[in-house]
Length: 478
Image 1 (cartoon, rainbow, N blue to C red):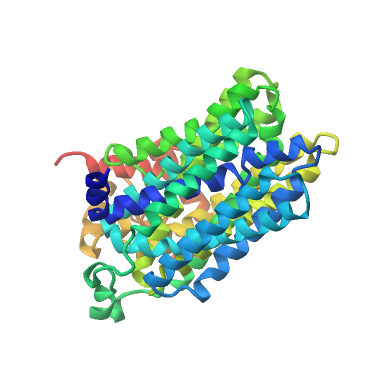
Image 2 (spheres, one colour):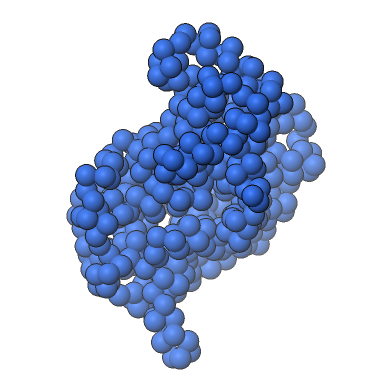
């Protein structure tokens, strides 16, 4: 054991991933929509939605405020240790009979869990090099959800108290490992040297980060609807839902992590949006059988896995543009929590009205169409700031002469006119129809006419297919 710990302490990246995943697994299975607390509440004959609202709001406050007083790695370590101790002590309260102490505990542990998550941003930045952050994000999401499935399964199918016991044990191990994390990191892994060398060439990160936060907020409303509308609709399949729920999520994360070079991730966000849309359409038209659940849940959770990895890894890229990673991670993930809270509030009120399922699905589809409009804008802003990220289409990261060569080749191969290739150029860079029309001094109707001709020549129907066909052309050997 001593040899193992000595080796683990040498790899601070792995140590930080394991310690975070243990605490995060507890978070997902107890206060944050966790089945442990839901089942404990059911045992007391109390409605669980109230405790869940308190937990989510407290967690949001912890995430979004922590950076005000956590500005150094040594402070982050102290905050993580303190938060874990509070979460252990607070979790023990749930072995007592229901009282006001439960609600005080829920508020405290959720708030301090938010501080823990944001503080971990210092270790995410310090010990995961730029090229490792995508893998680190995938690792913590996978490990946290594997632990969550195990604890939730025990809580639902065996005993909520056994689930709580295992969750507290995970916290205790996480606390032990957090003590082994370094309070200070090497300066070479924790600086902004490239920004200092060329500050005039680095765009301001505020607008892209704000757009990303808006994207996270809006898309996670669909997650909140899922928690309060979709999942309860299939609660009668208890054994299946308790174990299968997050399996598609984990599988897609595993595939993206290990086969990222074989998967063109530049347009997978559009595919994920389509999958969420299909899942809610299926929820409207299918029954509540096992097969229906498998279809709906597989589509939805796979898509949510894509989006979670997208913004976790993108937030990791923003660390290079901020002195305080707790601020970046805390604010970014607080939008995730806020979106779930809004969706949960809407969903919890819809289940009591006639055709509530239909209305919830309709709201989700409206959100998806809104995101379809926002995604190109987000993509354009991110690609100006972040170079070479797995989820970003690489055309906009080429030098101007490389872009010109690529577009000339594409024009010849696809027999496009000069005007059409200009429009393709803008589309690939993430411009909206209105933005392209303004740049080319043409009307939006003329613009739409040209796009229709382009799509007919290329035998495609959407911008996603345009990105795909261009990517395939670029990947062909010369």
